[in-house]
Image 1 (cartoon, rainbow over the protein chains, first blue to last red):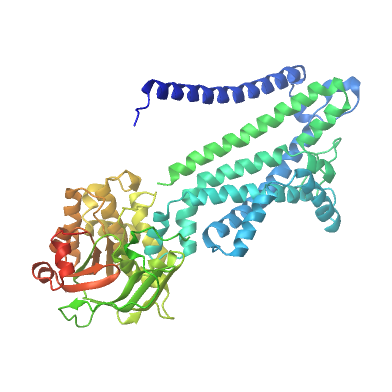
Image 2: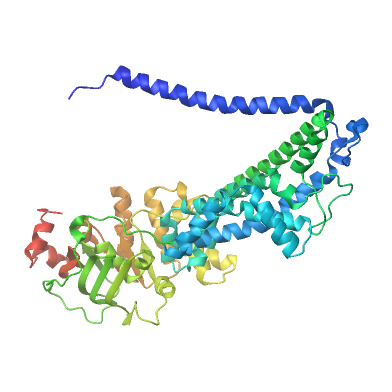
Length: 288
Length: 281
């Protein structure tokens, strides 16, 4: 046997490390350029009245245009989507991971859920339009949008739930069962608390996904010029991405307002993320 | 909540074809056993891990099961409280009489069975909760207890496990911060809190240092008057120290069962002698 040269081995290590750092820097650079270009465009239009004014199309009053109805609409739609998709997705994840034996049916179910994540979102919009808006007769309302987005984010919640549950060591389940706990007691009192941080991560992904979706909601009939605030699940609605798209399409004079909308959307996203992180830290402390 | 059977040594691998099992050498008759298996066999899919084991375990004594890795001793232990049920593809035949009632009978709920049979695992597995909540968990599974009642039971369980003095000031801290030996005694306290009639111990000291091991053995010595203890160990000195009776298993079958001293001093089977003198295993 010929010994491997230590110099070559160390050089390889350095080369790979350099490659990894470069990959991180590339990602950060793209993010930086994106943020900078948005903020630079939005800067002239960043004002508090964005939050309180209603949308306009009159090009002489660009500086009076706002997002009031879209912000409230986004909060309604995303909130209701989470309220529907988290119980459903976490429930399905628990079933698949803890109860479903590795039968043929359960494998088909799992493949179905995973494939659902790969369906283009506009397809969900068409489904929502046909099913919730027309067949169920809900109309173009918040609830129809939330139901549609629920189907869209459901697979993500299921997948992250399963990963979080799988990460809980089997020895904890064994310890609980050996004390005479039922399966449900074991899941409720040991597995879910231990998996809570992971479940929260799934919720953030779901919220971010729901917040950014544009295509299915345009198909569904979100109205970009709403002059009132959505009041509930049965209200007509507009959401931030649709409103931003509408402003952008109106003409070059509106690009600043559109960019300002993106800043607002990002800030909402950061706020949701931050709240989840705080909640996660608190959960981790509460575990003992 | 199931897993594949752990890959054991190939020594357990046997096709499910008829095989002559030699009669075990049983030199002592246990009258009125607390646990009795009759022709118990356990399969992991098509691999037979336990072959026709008939064994009578005495009440309020300590019985050790020894044997080389993969001999089926842990599987036998877990067959007593039906923990093997959680393993996918595991199948049990024959009878496992716990206080005269077949644990695998139609009227037995494994949840109730496990409630009266504590199990201590090889690796200490405290819950990722406070010391207090670790003990309270088992009580709250079965009872509605107010905080006064809970505190009383938690304290007495920790005292029984010789752990109270070490943890009384850190009941609200994470159990994961305890040392390995303390964690294992916490697991014992956790099991004792719901007053089991039996305590099964699956190599409880194999992850511990000698000092922690001595503490667990002292504890077993104190407990044996109150509960029926079955301990699986690959440490023969330990079996000699703590057990009243000892069973030797090899390749899934029971080879010999006797009073501990007799088994170690005058084994009847050559296999037993070879094992306890360290010629294999």
